[in-house]
Image (cartoon, rainbow, N blue to C red; front, side, top):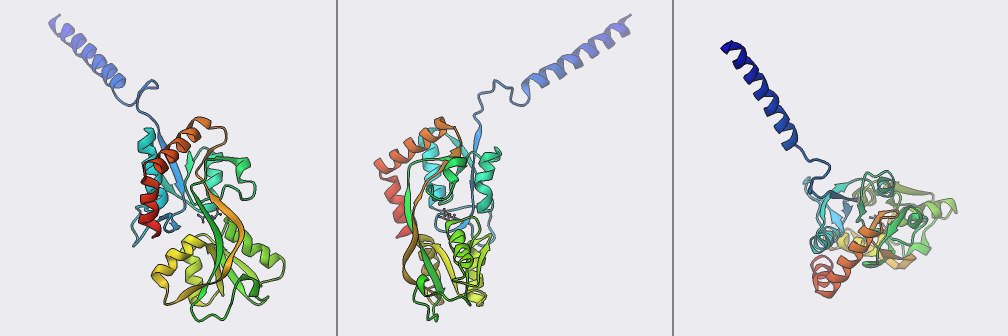
Length: 260
Ligand code: GLN
């Protein structure tokens, strides 16, 4: 009899232990663990977002700004690096929550696919060439030339348009800006069409082998952060955080840090 009672008690204890662990483990639907927002970006766009020396850590102006906004607005964020032309599809397919990628909110049909916040930076396109190039500017390109830029970007669209119009032989659109710079230095292309502040960052480190030629061109750009279509609550928080960063001096500090 005693043995039977012991076995029953042991079985009851095991069932109880299992039930408690099932309740205590993991986060229930009602858990107060707030969701971590996925900030998607393309990290070869220094000084906005970049990695260096094979390190996966993403650094740059957009990283610092987004972290400051997140702290100000009580958001938890993580950064996910992907190709530029995957950024808006990532929001559309709920693979990302925020785009922070020096993205021009005025370009193409982007604003139909995602909701963009207030402008945080303005830019134009520039032509980057090798330091010994005789090219004088974007209007001087010839039909035998190839120009590189990044796929899915305003620069990429610009070089493809020049090629479609027969003004250059080929618009070489690549996944990473670093590939475009490499092709320029290898002589595979005669120029790179790039956002002015990003080209300036490249020239800061490579003024011996490259230069800008001519004046800014293309449509004037307004960079903004973006959220999934209809997520007004999150967009309002990003805009409020940005306004606070401009008000309290953080924005100016980060501009000095990354663009001076
Ligand atoms: N400003 C350009 C655009 O919006 C390039 C952005 C980028 O390469 N990260 O298309």
